[in-house]
Length: 145
Image (cartoon, rainbow, N blue to C red; front, side):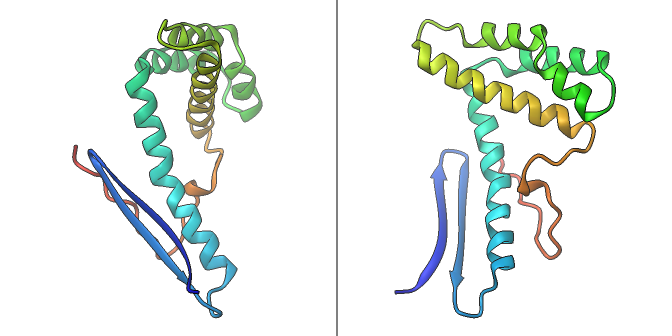
């Protein structure tokens, strides 16, 4: 049986097909790079989807306020992401009657990760593999939609 890694997405506004054939000559570094390249598109789609279920712009406004009041080192930024301002806006955004308690908590966690990732990027802290510049890998094309 042929070994492969395949990712196929075909939804409104997003078509992505990524395949990698794995042979005896395929080195672990190539697999690692391929998997990291998947993360970029997936992260973007998670954030796009999050923006469709909550008013993420409200979080961006509060996030920018908090970041402007915070120092420029990672420790201070991490501490700021656990502030009352961030918690308050996350709680506001998830308080929707359509969601049960568990769903509110889940969406809240997505919002906290979104905020942390965005905040740490302001001080050039890499928080996942998709941010690594891989020689020879092209930047993903933006899909018009």
